[in-house]
Image (tube, rainbow, N blue to C red; front, side, top):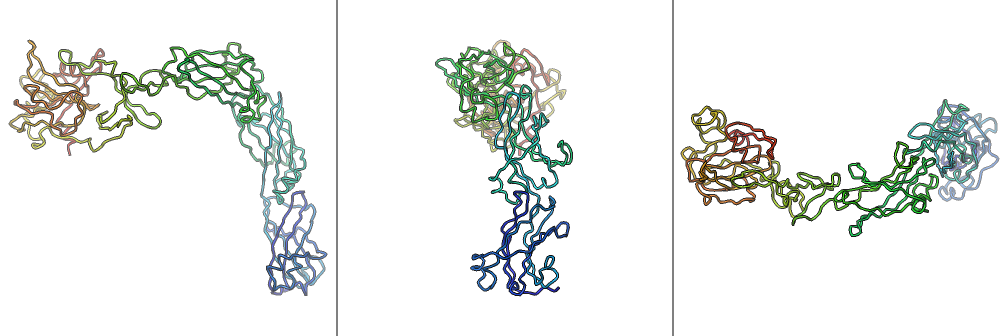
Amino acid sequence: MAQPQSDNYGYLDNFNLSDGSLRVSGWHADDFAVVAPYHYLIVFDNTASRQVASQLLDRNQTRDDVAKAYPQMVTANQSGFSADFGHLKLRPNHAYSIVSRYSTSNQGNGGGGAYQDMWLGPVTLNQSAYSIDSVTQNSSSLQVTGWMASDQYLVHPYAYVIALYNGREIGRARVAFTDRPDVARVYPQLYASEQSGFNVSIPIDAQKLTDGQLSFILRFASDPAGNNNYVDMNSRDYQTNLGDIRASYDDAAKQIRVNGWHAAMGRIGRPYEYLIVIGMDGHEFYRQRLDSSDSDLTNLGGSQGAPWIIDAGHSGFTMTLPVTSAMNHWGVRIIHRYTNDPDGNGKNTIDVYSPEVSINSGFQRLNGGMVYYDPNRGQIATGWRTVNGNRYYFSDGYQHHRYPTNRLVMNDQLRGQMYTGVNWVDGHCYDFGSDGIARAQPQNDWWSWPFPQDGEGYFSIGQRFGATGAAGRRNGYHDGLDFGSYDHPGSAVHAVHGGKVLGIDGVHDSHGNVLWWYVLIYDGRYLYVYQEAFSNPGRITVQANQIIYPGQVIGYRDTSHLHLGINTSPNYGPDLAHSYQESWSDPSEVTGGGTWLNPETILRDNVR
């Protein structure tokens, strides 16, 4: 029959499946009820498009709140409803509506008379929830308590708790549900939430639970054995091996004070305990066995940190360990170990590690500067190091010695010294400041011709670099590029690139007489040799160890030409001795070898 039109309001307050039966409540205000006194509630499956159940109510309930909200409606004060439909054949993942109907007919569902409906909902039965309240390890089992509820329970009536170790099943127990009214209060719409509690015991072999992750599957299945046609909920992970070692170094006493706790499910069958001191590279310094006086101590950290592990509250230990001379400048770690081997060895061990303990490692004062002892090697670091996200550079210690040595020689006072201020490394300029932190200075990474007013200019065959075949040269080879005073006029010699002055010295003949003076500048990648241009040291305007910038005047030419050489080796003595060939190799030398490069090509490619 055609439905009349009038104001029509309603709300579904409650759709409760907590005890397995469907109970609903709400309100439906419609003044059509004055002439249509029969009030029906219908459960309708929207997914299957069918009616599941209907119920004719005896009377409506008083709802003063609705009357206040809709004072213009005559029926608002008596619009409340509630009904218990009992256990219905509902389906998970289906959406259900509650249809509130006022009808003139008291037959069937009221559809034979004039009626007006209010569709309330829908509610989709696709919810699941769970909580594991406690996990307790016994000698041969795990006791697990909590609750699990799912709308899938409607068609999957068999419930299991399954224990996994590193993702593989190690045991299971079937659930016999118990009352959990607290869960029902929070999840009234969730099917059977009122009977969702469990307390199961799962047999395990604890000795196999060494150092991994324990977790649980909460399963609803249609298979009584729980193996087929199931839906799962997965718990969080529970570590089977946990600990906290706190170790501090006392430099005055040369001791490491150690205390902490170590809780391990696999401790059963491993009665021996050790503390083992290792370097950050993993090598062992020594070990010491714990006894009953310094182990198995009551410890709140263990009971709170790993309450699921057996005897976690009695897993504490304490000991003072000596620091040997071999440990100085190392970063060390302390291992606490459970094992079935009296000597603490074997593969059947369970370990936890302390954080790094510095035994005078890291940044230390030495020889008037700052050095860095690599905690992974116990040695002074050289070259680049990244520490706490910052980059530092430490000297390799080699220093240029003047004639007659003309070689790089190790200076132990310089080795490992942290760079500060402006320095050149790997061919680039950095400002290391007073704290040693590298800050790139790209504005200083430019190039210049030694006589910039002339640019590249012109070179004859005899002036050019390499095997030119020019007469008067050994092997017909020239190790640099000559800038003549005729083709490149001017006296001021400019640095072609930045760097640090390694040395200033004279080139001597076989009788020890000075032929000319030279300046060596090294940028961490190339050695720049400025020679044959200065007849005496007074023509040179820079000093040893001075930082030089590109284009800076380093001296004034008073000879016929400047010879510019560029070599990959900063070891000038061997470089000079092999000036008649492109490359040299000698393992006995500091740099091991070097190669002369073509200055004309390098400058042409880089000068902008």
